Image 1 (spheres, rainbow, N blue to C red):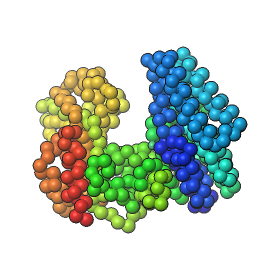
Image 2: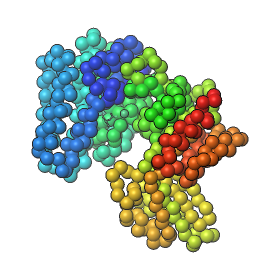
Image 3: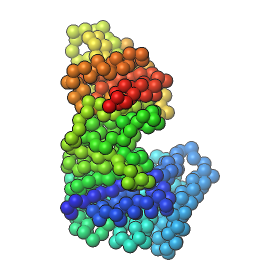
Image 4: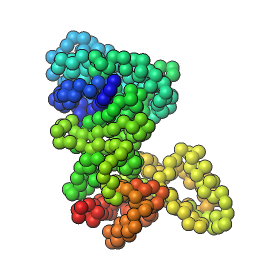
Length: 450
Ligand code: ASP
Ligand code: MG
């Protein structure tokens, strides 16, 4: 379909009946929106995840299942309790209960994904009914028939080819007359088992569907009016960005701006699908367009902040004039699936940052890795650090840009600076306790004068 729009509504956008009705207004106002991808009602996925914990008690399980049921039933009540919707919802809730009580759950990644999928399944069921009651020809479509993935449960990788084939077969022919209401976050593997794309994955799902259908636009409706120059909680001076390039937005997503799931832009970039981010509460307030080509390419576009960074410094006098040291280090990290964000090197040392996974001990690095590294170099691990990334254009080539940034930061202690690998970012580490102040100050220096 020409001018096809795929719209995704996040958990707060579909949190309850009123919120869902605002989403329905948005869909009904634009006849090009033919595919709608919904998240679970806000708070539901967290509850589903808690059902998969080994230490959950029977009583806690009962309470959690009741809370989920209440969130869903409040919406069904507002819909006037249509009999068949109640039946379909009860079916899902009963299935959920069965899986939640299954003894195999704690050890089965597959069942954990199955459990997490019910939030989105219930959400699309109810949103399709909201749409139908508003007169739309809407179907609740099971995206697991289309979004095919590998079986890496918990963080499955999509199979783009198969997804396209299935979308062409099952969705494309009906688009002219039907609005497809479907689930974000979930898919299925070759054996038909339910998979999930990882927390926050609905954005990514919607992008994959947009790609598979050659949509013109992907709309991500959330609870903020687009992407801001920095997190508005850090400084009141933050302001919305009307337009940003794919490259800049990808850097922002990677460097901590929590607006989009970091993988969302990959399919959009592959097919040149324009992405719009806006608030379903205030659809008229505008938002941010993320496009392949943008008119305005300012040197400074935004500042992103990512907390909980671990800095690992490896020092080896034998590295002097030796080859293979870095390869050795990175092989060990790769073997343990540790992804490195920033790297700086000197003749005999290398510093790298990694994300500190929440709740991890040993400052984010597994002791085995530390041991292996310590076999051939001195290892120093520091935490309580935050990564600040200035995103913009030509940051490596513009004369004076680095100098301006450094002089804006002269009163702060910077732990590591990375510039030059990308034209779109300038990153540094600072103590987490200073990070908020650093961002506020830098924002004032770089943006307030403009
Ligand atoms: N419901 C899932 C989550 O909370 C996916 C999403 O909302 O994007 O992680
Ligand atoms: Mg989200």
